[in-house]
Amino acid sequence: MTVPLRGTQSLVGQMGWVFDRPLLTGIEVAWRWVFGVPFLVVCWTQARQILAVLPLDATGLNAIDAQNPWVAVVQLARAWALYQPHVSAVLSWLAPVAALVWVVVSGVGRSMVLKRLDPELIPRLSFRPVQMMILQAGWLAMLGAIFWAWFRSMAWVSATHITTDAEPDLIGFSFWAIFLSLGFFTIWALVSWALSIAPLVMLLEGRTAVSALGQGLRLGKAFTGKLVEINLVMGIVNLALIVLAMVLSAAPMPFSDELGPDALHGIAAVAVAFYLVASDYFQVVRLKGFQEFWKMFRGADVPS
Image 1 (cartoon, rainbow, N blue to C red):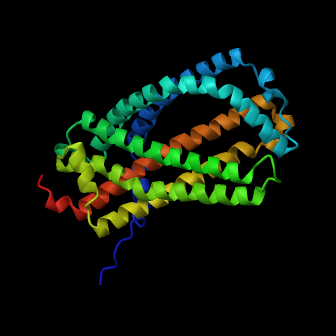
Image 2: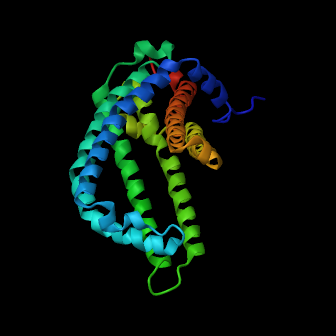
Image 3: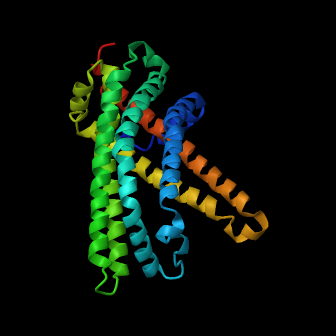
């Protein structure tokens, strides 16, 4: 009797396969950084312009009471009230421009990764960046909706548990903040697989972006279960990478006097770079896992 293969049982082999082909991770890292580096430069430039109009000492951010978190929260809220109009004015044009650029860059970059994901399938994979951009736009829209819902839930938690007319409910605030954050994270892992598998279905089966997205929702219980399982595990791996990067950046703190601030900043930068590269590597591993299960469940039914 053949034991059914779980979605995560083959991940170790796929991790080794991707690790032996660094070009795939390199392409994934490259297209993300092609967008990310200029985006961060623009954000830094706009932040400096805002700080030139509203310096830290004018808003009280240079005098935050780090010993009393409740006082610090009030100080931060007052400062944010001053900065919010300026930040909103920048976001009103930066957010749509950044989204459009990300869709274009990610559509081209992800197409290049998928085109090289399996040498045996290269003859059937056409380069279709425009269709990929449509799917990437859908992915970004879903991410934005999930993030907006999470942000509104955090606003509700803050408004109901930290008020000026009563003792702040730290336990209740922490409980709801953790519960809702993990809840939205799980929701994202449970629903984003459809948009993650759609590019593969589009390329491997010669469909349009809309048709691939519709087919991605009708892959059958067995195939869908594997995709959801891999997505959940990759989400947990991403959380583990965040924790590991935080540990790496915080580990030298007891030696701060000997190392100096420049060394600490350098270590923090290395930890961030490690997280970004490792996260991109596991993104490729997830795509490889999706592709292998497509070959298992649908490859034989789709003509070459």
